[in-house]
Amino acid sequence: MCFARGGHANAERRAAAARLLPDDEFQVFVKLRTLRKLLADREGVPAYALFTNEQLAAMVQGQVRSITDLAKLDGVGKARIEKYGAAFVGVLCGIEDPTMASPATVDESADSAT
Image 1 (cartoon, rainbow, N blue to C red):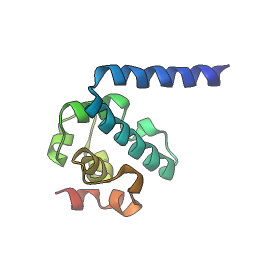
Image 2: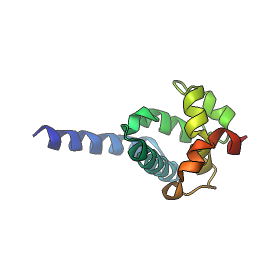
Image 3: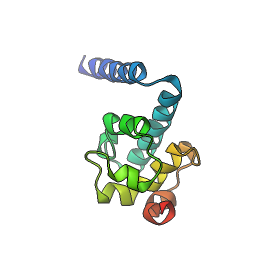
């Protein structure tokens, strides 16, 4: 029963995000979630360890377009920026497909985004 409840809670969170974001922003939010899941699965960590849903929404709403913009978000520190910044900024700028994120993209995030 707990498993079913957890799934329901996740669906409610996605629905809440959908209500808060306009359609075009929600589509970017979905791409960021896809990227986050792919990277978290590769690393064997929970998705929220990379960025929370709230941080992803803030990226979209704040129109993050650079590593500098990303660094201004609450709870986003140097380690996350160095490891994941370029991949997430790439999606936010529309230049990277979240399903094509390679380990090299993540490893070289600081170099390729600046």
